[in-house]
Structure formats: C-alpha cells, structure tokens
Amino acid sequence: MTRTAAFFTVVFAVLLLIPSFASAQAPKPDGRRVVTTTRLVALFSDLEQQWTQAMQRRDAAPLNKFLSDEFELWTPAPPGDPVSREDWLHDTLTASHLQSFQIQQMAVRMVDDTAIVSFVQRQKADANGQDRSGDYFIVDLWTQHGDTWQVLVRYASPIKNPPQPSPSPTGKQ
Amino acid sequence: MKSACHSSFNVAANRTFFTLLLVLLWVSYANAETAYTSHMVPTGKGWSEEHAYASHTVVTGNGISWHGGPIMPGAAHVYYIWYGNWTSGPKLSDSQTTVNLLNALFGTTGGIGGSGYERINTTYGNVTGNVAWAGATTDKYSQGTRLSDARVGMVVSNAISSGKLPKDANGIYFVLTSSDVSETSGFCSYYCGWHTSASISGTDIKYAFVGNPDRCPSACEMQTISPSNDSGADGMASIMAHEAEEALTDPDLNAWYDSTGAENADKCAWKFGPTTGQIGSGAYNQTFGSHHWLIQMNWENARGGGCDQTLGGPFYTR
Image 1 (cartoon, each protein chain N blue to C red):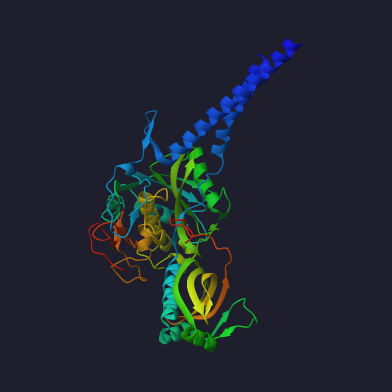
Image 2: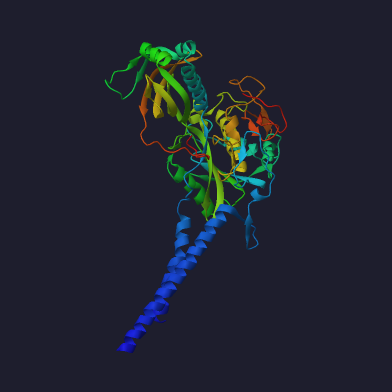
C-alpha cells in the first residue's frame, strides 16, 4: 500500500469511528423536559396566587388571614432588619402598587408541618414612588394550623440578569 | 530537483483535497442524520418520511395549540425499565406486587390503551389512544442511587444498546425507580415525573422518569390509602398516565401545549373529577386491567376544552 493510500485509509477509518463513539455516549437532548409538578407545588401555587392577588387588590381581610402573628419579611436591603408584620401590612395596603405578577419555578419541601416554598416572582410594581419591577427569588415558610396554612416568614431577593422566559415547554417552570 | 519538489507538492495537494472531500462528505452525512432524527421517521424500506404532523387535522380554540411538531401516531408501545430494587426494596411498594399492578395498567387486556380515558388523546390529531405494554427490563443501580437527568438518559440508552429493549421510534420508555433512588434535579420537591425525547442510536426515542412516590407521599400521592392497597403503584399510575398522554401529543416538546407551556395533562394535574369513595380512603375513578385506580383527568381538545375522565364526558374543574 502506498503512503498516500495508507494515509487516506486512516483518515476514513477515523471518520467512520466518530459516529459510533458518539452513539455509545449518553443521549444528548437539548436539556429540556416537561415535568409533572408535585401535589404540594400545585397546592402552594394556588395559595401564593391567592395571597399575592390579595396584595394586588390591597384586600386586608385575606392578607391578615394568610399572615402568621409572627410574620417577618427579610430582604437584603439596609439596614438588615426584618420588616415586621405591622409594617409590611401598612406598606402593602397604602404604599405598594403591584400591577402584575407571575410565579415561576416553584419547589416545595416539607419539614414536619412546615412547607419551605421557593419560587421566582416576576412583577411590575412600585412602592413610595420607586420602581420595584423585576424578578425576585422568594422563599416562604408556611406552617399548618388545622386546615389553614399561614406564612411565618418570607425571604426575598432581587435577581440580577434573570434568564429570558421561554414560550415552549422547558421543564423548569 | 524541480520535478521532485513538484511531485511532492502534487502529493500533498492531493492529500489535502481528498481529506477535505472526506470531511465534507462526513459532515453532510451527520447533518442528514440529525435532520432525519429531528423530523423524519424510518419506513424500514430504506428511506424515511416526515412524521404525521403535516397530515393530521388541527383543531383550535380549545385552550391548547399545536406548534408544528410531530405527535405519536398509530399504536404506541410502552416499555418499562425497573430501576433499583423492585423485589425487596425499603418500602412495601418496592415489590413484585407493584410490578404486576403496573404491568396490568398498560396491559393488552383491559388496560388503559383504547379506553375512553386514553381516547381523549384522539382529539390531538392522528393519536389513536392505542398504547400498550410491549416489554420490560431491569436495571440494578447501573447509574447509582442518585440519578441526574443525564443518567436517566443513560439508563434508557443502555437498555436499548444492550438489546434488552428494542429501539422503537413509536415507543415510550419509562424509567421507574424504587423508593431508595433519588433524582437530583427536583424529584419530590419540584416534580413527580417528567418526559422528554433524545436521539439514541440515531432514533428519536421518547422516554419518561417516574419515581416511586412512597419516597415522598405528601408530594407525589393524592392518598396513602389506595384502592389496590399499594399506594406507590396507585401514585405511579396517575403520573405514568400523565407522562404517556403528553408523550403521545407532545413527544418532542414542540407540538401541543398552551400559551403558558402547559401540555394536555399539565392542565389537569392533580384534578380527578368525581370518585367512588372519598379521596384519602382508597377512592378511585378508573378501572383498568381489573384494578381500580385514582388517575388524574386529561384535557380534551374539543368542545371548548376542559378536563374530563373519558372522551366526550362532562368537564370538571377539580
């Protein structure tokens, strides 16, 4: 066999082998899948919707119903103290204006009778004349009292550079 | 000297030319294969043809839309991969009893295939509602006890490449994990199951993950007292029905879903309609394979759209 023929034989053999090697590896979907969310995600999606809609309407009765007596709001804003139940209610009923919101990517983990609910909230809002629109990562701790769930504490942080929404099923929504 | 140099140059030029030609030929083949697996279905006759999506009737205005991708036409085949310990696992439901129950669910005699419930999917075009169990295999922790999405894919890929299951473009492969197996992308905290598709050995393979919900009953079971005395099997049955009907109508995640990205079964998740008995005490709303089941409703793409328990039946909101 001439050197040239040998060279092309090797190249051709390598090219033939590459697809075989690729097919033996893990399948490579584009990373998307569509999930069946848990029963708890369905439950707390509904509760969070109800609570946030009450904020939107500035409806004091359901807001009081959803808040535990010891409710606190924690955010990274200075001075680093929690917002008390009373202050949160006052701000929500008088100073905040929630125009629209969308809850995404919810996950729920139960620890005894406490539900740890995390999600991303995309909102258009303002408070005291300042724009509060954007995406926030929120963690709410809900506790159960009989058949009633109440929020004990909320942790909320703004998300910088949030991922763009996808119009098609992605799995994590 | 000049002729020797000229000769060497010709050899090098020829090598370069033919190398480039081979690379171009290989790239063309690879792209054709990719295009083939994305949109084409083999006929077994040496050529492929486009999936049925170009030919089925598209019905609109029922709360769910078609986005151009293929559905699974004809009779779909269900394959189970029992992953983990399904003979004597940590929970009572990690057992042959569960295996037998779920075999019966998609069984060819009285199973879910062809039922009024499954025929809700016929409102999505050339989906026949004929779906039946076609085979199973086991996998004793080949990917460990903490699966990622990629490892779930490997379980399916290995089952096919090893010949334990056939390579079937009209198949739905279920990876069913025992209660001691976790799925690290959110099983029990975010989801109870999921479905997707991927190119495996050159074929568009549809597969799903469903874990034993006895691992997290409050998240993935509607009731812990089930009509078959096997809460794990009952919980899995509803999730498997959900994934199967979405695999039929949106196998490649580009066919039927609504403006929020919800597929047909998503729109009725955790909604069961009227039941025999109270939920929490062994209630059921379907009977397949001689067993009673509590199975979520499915979205019918007709009559304005809604969740029902059987094709043409009344719609319910919970």
